[in-house]
Image (cartoon, rainbow, N blue to C red):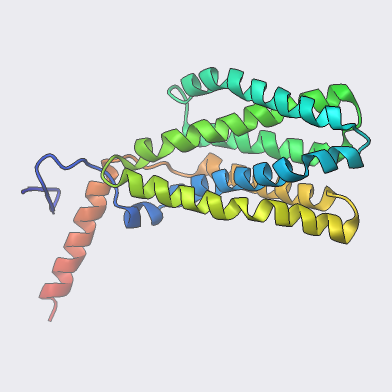
Length: 227
């Protein structure tokens, strides 16, 4: 092996963060919570969307039309979102996606017309696409390839756990209040707060791991030589 920045590196080993190092950064948790937020919304609405629309006076046909519209909007948005991801900060893009979905959540209880429902469906489709594209881009860009599978896998595990909360949140809200308004308001507030955090979070680069390794090695050396 060779020595780089105070730490031993095996020849040919990819650079980047270990999982423990990535988890020590605010960026890891901001992007993980962002995709978890989308998972809560997606899982909750996928199970209760028809009930939500029925409560607001829409027919079952409106439910199927909304699913189709959101899917098409998300599909069309993938290419421009992917292109923008190479041009602008992924953290700022994540903020846009979170705020867009949060705004839709806040608006949803007040939607009673077909045109408003169409705008809502487009907003949800685009906002969800932004978060999805960033989820599959951010880990390699920020943390490198060294333990990319572990880092992304851990974040994916968090989304699975978050998905279990969505249906429970909406079900409890409806059981207690008779509608879903409080759940949507809670999700909207959470989305706005996460969006604010993502706007200001510092996104690391894979080479930053070398300075962390060097700092750890220097600290260990000091502990060893200190009487």
